[in-house]
Image 1 (cartoon, rainbow, N blue to C red):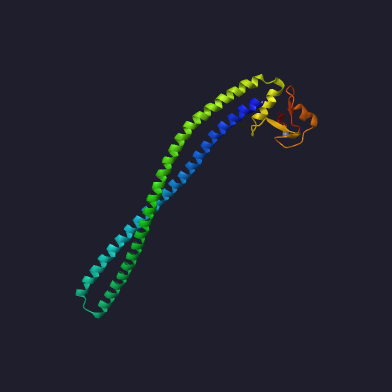
Image 2 (cartoon, rainbow, N blue to C red):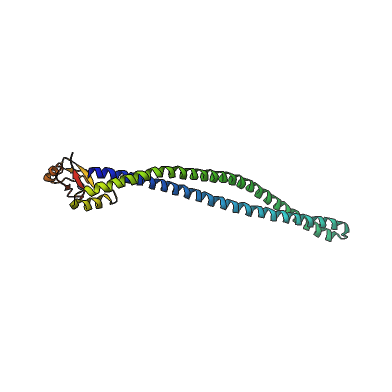
Length: 226
Ligand SMILES: [Zn+2]
């Protein structure tokens, strides 16, 4: 049984390593997905900003054009009243244009900052994509080894299991294949090494005999004594 526990521990350890690799790759993949989502979001913001700037520039051009035409009308105006109205209109347009130009400049600054951020994010995505690929390759190679260890020890385990006495085999296999993978515990004095409960003295003595198969009265694990 001890030999089987040793083989089974190797099986579990190989399986854990493979599982851990898979979990690490999944976590890295999730991080990369989040970064890619942020990159897509940044692309959308940049496009929105660019079209906003373009619209404002068109509006500035259109208003400037109107202002120029109004300026030309000055020459043909005859009354003071008409001139005042015209100048008022020109002043309002100028204010409009100034405000739009300020706004556009602000947007251009924002765009510069966003594009800089975008480039950094893109570099990070590229680097992480590469690192994920190389991690996957490295794990794949390592997992091949662990898989071989897994298979080899599982086969040994199964063949040793055949030599186990029928009365105990199925119970032993059931316990060892449970979640924690431990079927056998060492007794220290009269204390079970698995659950730390005190077992009856006669069982503690039997646990030291080669011809006896003993189980802990509390946790049910098989017990032995060196
Ligand atoms: Zn116990």
